[in-house]
Image 1 (cartoon, rainbow, N blue to C red):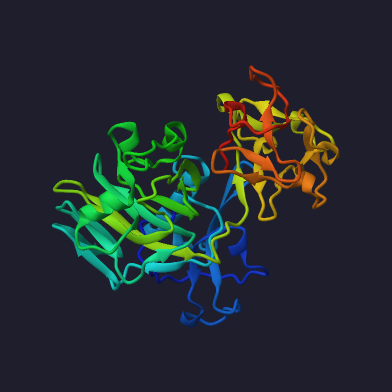
Image 2: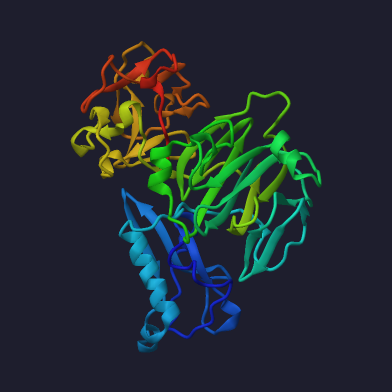
Length: 414
């Protein structure tokens, strides 16, 4: 995050430190925590967040518990901390501010234990950061092969028009080309063919370029990837926004088994990595995700007039970032906006049944299951969320319809 990217793993300073009645970790992304063993008065049982960020109803909220002394504002690192929070809240920089719990570090900045270099070149380690040089080679995590579903997160930064990538799903090998030929590379490269630029599954599928460009921080600034593997499906998130959705259909490859690696591409390709962490099978169900739901013609799923009465029409509308277009995908399968749920009228299953806003009630009429083909299905009716008609403009209602994977049934989720 822009507020903490300039800091190392520890930051020693004096301030007036608050204790909090509740821990924000389940609803916000914690950026810094206090070490309660380093001072007296901490009472949060060793988990003491002190700075965090969160997306909230289409807006952004940044908090820091520092700044209660005059001396704080003469401290360059603290002033940069505040500036980073302001820049992010103002939309000048991007960051993944979704809540994050349960991840295990693979590289925490202190050492490369468990990692091996394959091929020429390598990575230097300084300031808790791995920076590539030479190549073509790869630093791969040899200590464990990952099977089943997982979510891999890591932070990366390119100095300019540099080339690198993250490999997944490849067999153990000291030959970096084994990863190229047997796994999948999630590309880092500012300029190349669309299936070989940042966010692409290299050579297989381009990122959503519009979504990628909106989420990407410029050269010299940090970005966060989440690579989420569910079965043979790979979802790619950049700074918290989904930019690619790829399904492996090659029987010679599998996303369900293999190692993880970081590419050093060649001389002059300077890409840095840090904070590599993973959540494996059994703990990978994502928490609530909030943001826009985009459909055909790039329009957003919208609650008519921002109303919250039961039965309010749900429609397509030009995206505007309002609360009427901010949907939370909860762990129970509901899509929620304005405190209510996306609902199939009367729990019916006929083609053309109205989809509306309604008080959440836990029924099958309010349960939705995103599919790997981009559709969103209501399992109770075995039908899909569909933008009605053959032309789609502001005000086009959504309804239930037999699934056919046409453009008016494809949705991009937060």
